[in-house]
Length: 248
Image 1 (spheres, one colour):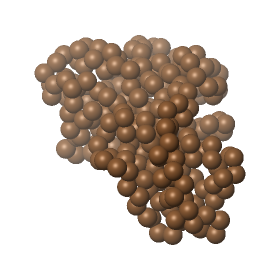
Image 2 (cartoon, helix red, strand yellow):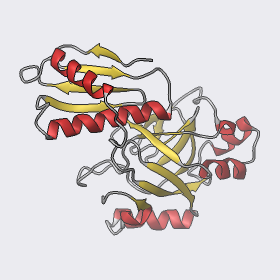
Image 3 (cartoon, helix red, strand yellow):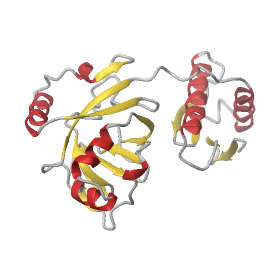
């Protein structure tokens, strides 16, 4: 599918690369996003205000007083005609602690029954994968990640919860995620992560970014509480969970 240019009023444009969740599309979106960021820093597209990447598209918000819709489309078309290989930022790689089951995995039993597996098998399959952060959305810092192994693909809950605890690790379809805030939600909750995924006081408020790679590590309830206590006391070194990449 050739990229489509979709106008959003007079100050935004969406470049749509496809119609599915696919790592190749995510890579294309990330590459264009990085190239536009470099163009802006170089002063060639000074009217760009913000970019918003998703699984399959990139929305560019711009100042129409500084940059016209036609000029932006023409420049993006030129960029798309060039090779964007190597344009994406180096990915951070994370190993995040999760306490599965206990009082934290509210739907672990349901997930096991739905998939025809034991609870232990669900957990082992979930931690066996390296996940790519496809996009950040829904809530500040909320990472949509894939791909979950096919044996764990399952629909959302028939009746969403009005309150999902912050840190809940959940699955639905081919995706997994961590709820950074207490919120409504309909995904299947199988565990909880004690790390805050968003903090407005950090230089980069969202812990995870598009393109980051994530592995999950099983921790006991006692270890979970130990880490949660360190978070509350502002005594936790988040660098210990980042295997490689940029500083936090």
